[in-house]
Image (cartoon, rainbow over all chains, first blue to last red; front, side, top):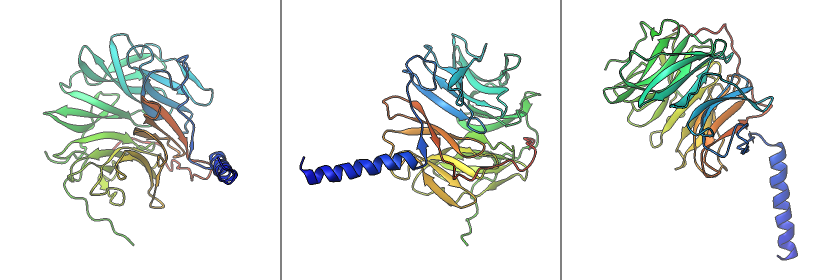
Length: 180
Length: 157
């Protein structure tokens, strides 16, 4: 490399480094942690959901052999336990939580049947929200106060959005759905 | 002042075309989602309290798809996937300033499933730049005007 080119290369490199130091948006990851104790592992991760102020992230990962739901504490850079949420014979996807992180909704596929489940982090219990719904379901999302849950349901070969009351486990009444 | 054209083909959450990817705002007032109701994949914002669609004509382009929306506390910021440049990018739309920002202009690989924090500053999405899907975190910075809850959270539509 000729000296002049070296100078240009140095200036270019310096400007890139400076831009990287000061500029937003700042990219934090993906920093793969092979131990499996971090946000990203040596296995695929998917379906992130950021908490209200970015202090936690819900996501899924294949790091334990099957797709499971994980909760990552971004301030203390560690995983938080979700006892009883994941099970060996279940493929869990699309987690979403209330603002306080108490309620977590997700889909779980057990023997080929996928349902929307609601997990309570305080009692460590979960319940099937869509047991009586005879359609495939996907992409659940729970409101910040944990009161309502919206998800996709595939009735008759087309995805539509249903909104359920978490407590009653029934669809919200009087929600104006466009005519089919 | 640019006036968004009226939304055509369905004024509710569901239509005769696929409707997918629901996402709440933290105040419980809005549900963002994606729909094919206007012929191509677009993102929509539904006001649960006033029971109407909020037009997003500025970001729904006719020749590209806008998909997988996620919204901040009062739906000021909306992040979504678009193939406007021929490959998937994560964009953020500021409804107050009526401005879009492409977060993944220089990011190699593919991206999908963006999510934004209630305050609008943190965004996470899936990125394939390391050869498989991992989670990428983006801090939009100290200059980000934070989105705040202006009322007690209520998700009752």
